Image (cartoon, rainbow, N blue to C red; front, side):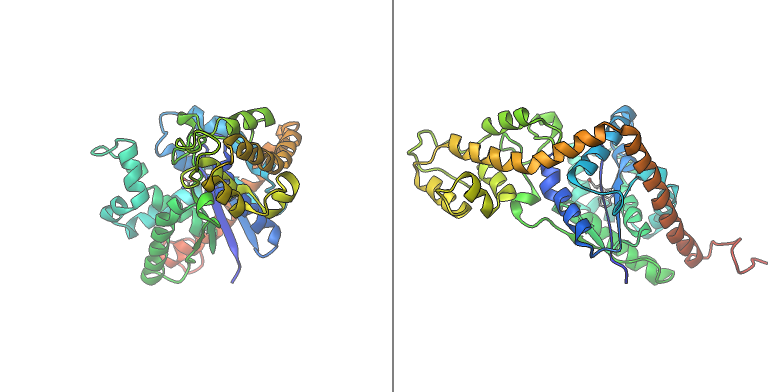
Length: 352
Ligand code: TRP
């Protein structure tokens, strides 16, 4: 069986370092591993509209931003198909047929949907489109017969629902769809990188993100203002590494060779943590180290972005061509789905 990746992001803002360690970095590694037959990376604008339907400008504005973020982290249009969800009508069509295979109560029990309903105060007035977005996500994944979906753990309920839909479809109709597996980030820090204020989530509205597009000065300023341990007042005080954003970021970004280069007094992160916990290690020193580590990782991303920014027409063409390629793949699956559902009236076997 072919190994196929499908994943994507909602274009509700620029992508930040949380997206990077949570998924983007891994996607590029998988792309360059050569182990996958096809890779589809989707800008999920239709899904973004399910809770931003009244703000289409926001979504439109971020289409090119997200494309630049993708290209600048190293997603390569020669290896990965970058496309826009709304430009593939086959996805909407699949969603409609899958709706028959899912109950309302099952959607309401989806933990991610549940918490989003609370967050957005939808309660008694949930838009149907929003409630159904897990079904549309199942269409995204199955249209490409994806075997692997690299995502954060908040997306696990979506993958689970997709698997249920696949099993139901295949047992009611015919073995057409493929059950995907989620691929999670490598460690807990990457799973959910906190904001620079130490809050559990990076979000534009909280103003606590480091964006991939931030310049070196901004990144440094944000790192130097980062939340650490409120009980670590004097350098000599014992410090806490748990819940300390600087250490969480180090867990996500730092590699052993960074110590050789930037902080040779320590062999690795465990030693640095031990010193901090004992006391005698100041916040400024660990922040400066983190700054060096992150600047090193972000520099090639910024350089690539600058190159692509010079030729936005080429970026536009990448999305357009990618959307055409993606559409052809989804159309093939939709044909098989319609055949299995016996609604392929004008193809092959005559109706009369
Ligand atoms: N729900 C994902 C997010 O919030 C975006 C998304 C839409 C997605 N369709 C997908 C991710 C299919 C993986 C597979 O970012």
